[in-house]
Image (cartoon, rainbow, N blue to C red; front, side):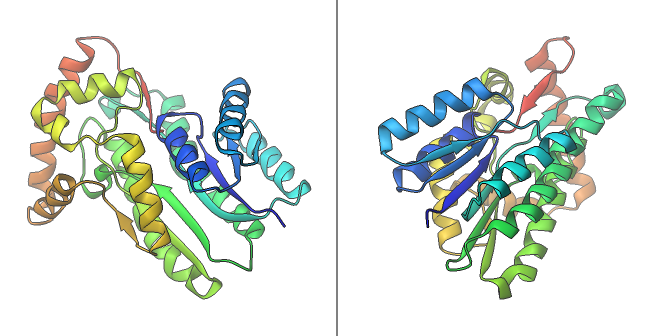
Length: 275
């Protein structure tokens, strides 16, 4: 029986890096994202380059009906899974008061609701003969209350706590859960612009997506709970834990407000995809 690793948000920067890393290890893939043409290109490229089998199905993970069609497709094809990598996520950077109702709903639907539903349903398709490995993509922001990114950091904190708790629940089922908490990654133009706006601090904490994907998969195979790629980011995380959260919020808020101003230069904040 052929088994697959499922990747959500597979055609974005980090999602594609995970797909390439899995393919390089000889793992068959089931990939999903909102754009079917992008999925076709990625699937064809991976199959040609690595000789693996890649199945795909387009899905708008913010839409419950679209998620239901994805689950129905996978169940109908009797897909057997060795792992699940939940990459899909987004951020609307800027003050919470300036967000629209639709932006608020979209972020919660993708960052929280979709992750939980996909994880819950795909656990039913796991290969019972092997250890089933789940990777959830959170963020270094999960450890801090972050003004200008208040919704995003809170949603990632949810994923961090959920992943750690779920890991213990699934331990008797021969499943592991690893939560990735990266700092900045140059996944698209807007992310690069945001990193540049942070100056030196942004540059020293940023890691290449290929490095992040490889480190995370290695951590998952070793059964680690949390993966923070890069020594600098581990130090930042440790230092932050020594400071009261209210003071951390003030310091981060001052930094991000200035970085946000430089990044957008008076324009309205726009969507930044997590993957």
